Structure formats: C-alpha cells, structure tokens
Image (cartoon, rainbow over all chains, first blue to last red):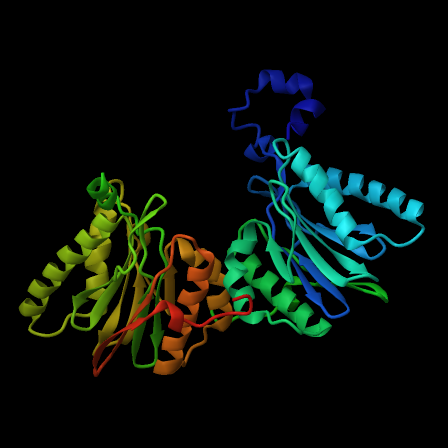
Amino acid sequence: MAASSVMMPYFSQQVSSKSDMVPDWTRQEVSTGTTIMAVEYDGGVVIGADSRTTTGAYIANRVTDKLTRIHDRIYCCRSGSAADTQAIAEVVAYQLGFHSIELDEPPLVETAANLFRASCYRYREELTAGILVAGWDRRKGGQVYSVPIGGMLVRQPVSVGGSGSTYIYGFMDSNYKPGLNKDQCMELTATALTLAMERDGSSGGVVRLASISEEGVERRVILGNQLPKFSTH
Amino acid sequence: TLSQQAASGEMGRTTIIAIEFDGGVVLGSDSRVSAGASVVNRVMNKLSPLHEKIYCALSGSAADAQTIAEIVNYQLDVHSIEIGEDPQVRSAATLVRNISYKYKEEMSAHLIVAGWDRRNGGQVYATLKGLLTHQPFAVGGSGSSYVYGFVDAEYHRGMSREESQQFVINTLSLAMNRDGSSGGVAYIVTIDEHGTEEQVILGNQLPTFFDQ
C-alpha cells in the first residue's frame, strides 16, 4: 500500500518509484499469504493459522494473530489482503453483535457465515479475502464454513485456506477421518500447518491454535522450536 | 484441428513421483495428457525407459519431454557400449540435465531420472530447469503441489519395496483427486538389482479417502 508516500510526500516527489532508494516492499500491498485450517469434532471446532504477514518479500509481522473473534463462540480465520479481511471481520462482528442483542440469545455460526458471504459476494470485485468461519452453537454444535475468494459459502467438516493450503490437501485427505476427538484435531491441525509452513514462503512463524466448544474458547501458541519435525529436514 | 491440439499436448499438467528405497527405486505417474480443457490421451504412460534399469518420469511439454527421453536413450546405449557395462544412474541424469540446461529457454520439460546401478544402488535425480540434484524422493507436475505436505509427513528412510510402492500409489491417488489436470490410471515402475517391474493400477483400484 502507498503508506510511504503519505508519510513523506515531499520526499516521494524527488524519488521515483523505480529508484533503488525506495525499497520494493513499500509499494506492495500487505497480504496474509498464509495457511489457515479449521476442523469440526463432536462438541466443537479446532482452528489454526500461521503468523506471517508480508509486504512483498518483507515480513511485516511475524507474530500475527489471524484467528479473529467475531462473537463469544464464533471465530474466523483470515487469508488474503490483511486490510480487506480486517475490515470485513469488524463489520461482521458489529452486525452479529447487534443481531444477537435483538434475538437475546447467542448467534448461530451459520448466521455469521452468511454475513461474511454477503459482504464478500457483494464486493467481490474489490476484495481479496478467503475466510474460514468456525464456532459452536447450541443448535448444530461445532461447524466450519468456508467463504473463499468470490464469495461462495459451503459447510465442510474440515477446510484449509490461504496460499499454503495447496501443499496440504493431500495430507488432509489422507489423515482426516470423521469422528476424531479434540486432541486429535489439534494435533492434525498443528502438523498440517507445520508442513505447509515448511513449503510455503508466505507462511511461517508460530502456529496459533484455538478450540471452541460449549465450555468456551481455549487458545494456544506453538513456537517454532516446538513444532513437529519431519525426516526430510 | 484435433492433430494440432494433440501436438500441443501438455504433460506439465500431471503428477509424477520417484522414491528411493533400500535396494532400488519406485517411479509413478498419472496418465492424463490435456490440451487446454480437453483430455487428448487418458492412458498415457509417462514413465519412459532410458536403459534397462534406468527410467525417467516425464512432465511439461509432451513433445519436449519425449524427445529428450529418446535422445538420452540413444546416448546411453552408445555410452554403455563404450564402457562395456551398464551405465550409472548419475550418467543418465547428467545427460538429461545437459539437454535441459542447454535448451532451457526453448524447452519446457522436467524429467525425474531414477534407477538402480551396481555402484550406488537405487537413486533419484531431479533435473528441473537444468539443475541436477540427488534426492531421497522427488515429485513433479501440477499435482505435486497438493501432496508436498503428505510426502513430507509420510516419507521416512528404510522403507521396504512394498511400502515404497504403496507410498507412491497413495501419493498419486491423493494428487489425482485434487488436481484437475491429473487423472486416469496410475503407472508404477519398480527397479532393483533383480530387474524392472511395470504395473498399472486402474482407477477403481486406487485407494479412496474419507470423502469418497
């Protein structure tokens, strides 16, 4: 984004954007080129994400939190443009909070997912946002909804997203089975994110995990040296 | 025209894999050749022999890859007569690499070379864009992106022949399920000191996963 020209308007008139004096990353948009994952289990969901935010090749934030609270038991995992996803999440959190007060009961995960879809579809030409909506409600228990770029909505038992997700489709297909418990889902998510972070240059840092159930939200961080290791490294 | 479409056949839209085990190698590929959205060949064998115990897996432009394989097959024949014994896998890989590097601007083909020789046993070499590296396993083609996580997690040294074959079949099946450009049947070639074994796994015999 053009942050540098706003901060130093006089300087940028003298220095053309092609000059070596202005680093390349100042001209790039901030993106959460990323890996995100969400898994349903009986009684809740487990969500996870890496922690890298990039502007071009520069890592703007190496400890980003891409697991964003929308409501007490509903979170979203953000991938794509950092600005777009933050803005959408704020709007949806406001809309859902208002709706929940009107209803006088906790909102449904499906409602949150539909609010995301409404924004992402209406403004699909302007936005770059791939979002996983996950949470727990009393009606349907743990649910994961995927709202990829373009603004479709689909519920899936397990879903991955972001640039790093391509590398772990095979791992996810072979290792996920219906009927896993919470700890197995946590391990599956941590392992999958680690594998993606090893292969995708835009994903890295630490692994952030959260589990959401009737009891509440439990968050964890797995630091780089504590991540699982594989024999090829 | 159909023949023009066939001539522009693309195998870069594919999945290929080769893996070393103790005593030999296993190579595998899918069987789809597409020209745009059309599948021009659904039973193409992309595992091409360079010598009796050295094979290569083809991806990229079908014409480029096949031509490189044929040229190296000829060069290896001459070379093995000159030295009076079976050629080394590294020699075959070097010949492939020399062509890939010299013509890297004009050609777009990636060949994985794998085989068995008496000096170093089973070996796998990648020759992407003209480099030459020896690796415990190599994957290539568009379908390979989807299985990097799987192979990183599941590969370990010291697998047996049967375990390696199953590993290759599982990897190909996962990639073929996710990559629209890979599909058809799975071709497997297993090479060790006793000989070379070719197999075909038909679509309905491939392993299935939780959502199928």
